[in-house]
Length: 110
Image (cartoon, rainbow, N blue to C red):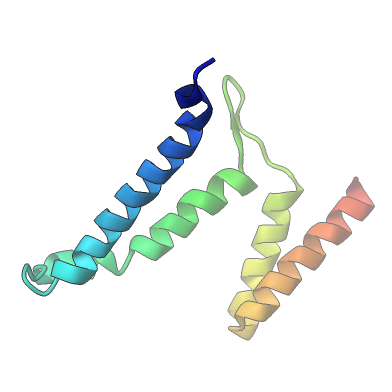
């Protein structure tokens, strides 16, 4: 086993890190030279919400091949936390309420 084989994972991590930094910093450094059109700016406002939905929905409603979506206690706790947020309009209540609801549901229903 050569020395390059031992360093390959580290070199791959460094190259990926450099490419991520360069692509993200490029807009910060050169963004004022190429202004974005208004329709692109308005579309970018929805990017954080779309990212959260892409992370949360598969977690609370996993999809199994041949069966479809599997409903479990996470979905009930998420719906309860949404109701809590609609009533209180407080993000801390959303987080704590959803967590406590999931704990209680797992304790009672196993």
